[in-house]
Length: 108
View 1: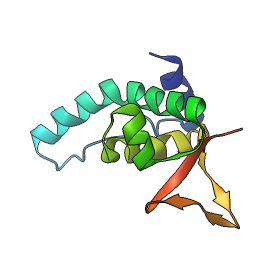
View 2: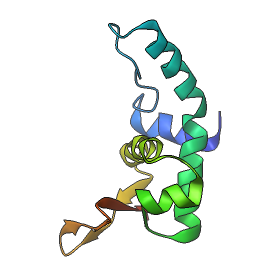
View 3: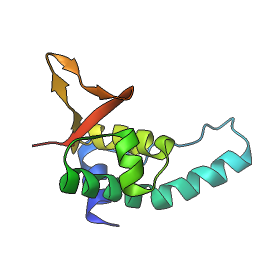
View 4: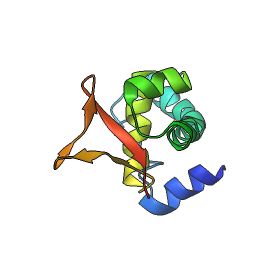
């Protein structure tokens, strides 16, 4: 387990390892959910590294920086936010957006 995975697990008591498929989902969804657990940590690490190196970024920008899809980024940013590792940039009391996507930064 990577350090990012440990932090995610410890900070949000299971949100990181939450069920990615429902009991009533077909078996193919459960197989996909098992696979997602295997690479979620590396996705989170790539997002964190990009935010640390390049500063605040939207999902569009993170897609270009990490090679991940918007869906992958959206799933991991929520997990990272719940773990307290990243946050949405607030400007003028409102969440900052770029191209319709929230702008994220590493929690200070």
